[in-house]
Image (tube, rainbow, N blue to C red):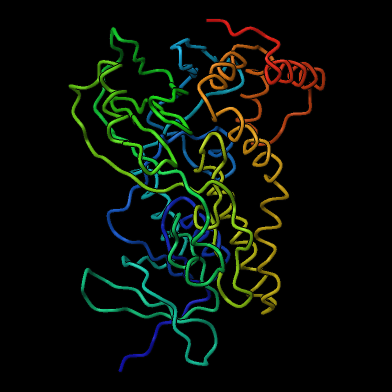
Length: 399
């Protein structure tokens, strides 16, 4: 019987979170196994802020497009353009290429890569946990031992369900998109240089639909927590609306997206979850790439503290540190989603608010910097007063 390979850390999941965790740990000198299942691409618009490129040393050559504006579309079809201005751009990546680049970088730093699907964790009384994974469908089971297991295996994480109480009850939005080969524009209003976000109940009763350009291709998608709603039917309608129904479909993907962080991220022993597995996706916007990588870095820092001390109590730092940095933004976005997405009447007023220059300025500054902007306190006061007026119905909706 062959000996079981041993690592300091086994990272399960090779998306932006897991790949970042493995990269940080490997370049710090730790032995790391990055385990990822084959053929996994998450449905994602692919938007990344410039801060991501700087903070995680990602080359701009990975960008397939730079969007300079976004268009918010109300239920009445009223469209509000939000130009980014001089403060930056919205970068676009193709997740198939982007994720693989991140995994390859982790491997180049010293992480060991293996392809397989997580099955379970076993314990034999020895140090650490034994991760069991299938190397092929119905094939041989591989086993590795680790002092720490980091689950970055996405929403509905198998590691979270098995090791974190209550993880299986975390609410999710179900997302579906189609990547199509798209023209530069269509007479029906598609613009290959602009991100479109559609707040229309006919396309999503409780979230939104999107059209994000990727150069020669585009991601056309929708999210909803309503299990009876047809996501495929909604995307079909959106493609027809924009004159994209005849475009070649390159791939179709669907997956759950968590709505809020889990209340606990560790098992108090030797398992930590991160990224989507920990529920780290921004409410209201559904933005996940930056926050996944930020969470991956926090997980790596927490892992290093755990490996140095051997104290399982330090694993609690991951959730505490992440929410200290981003929890306030998540709370505000959660309140926004709960209120403004609840009806078409409120969505109409929400899009009207997006026409306000103060709202646009602070929205883009917050997006680029990934924190609440305090440089212009009077703008916050004006937005608060305008928001109250909208909530009370004191401002007429402009059609």
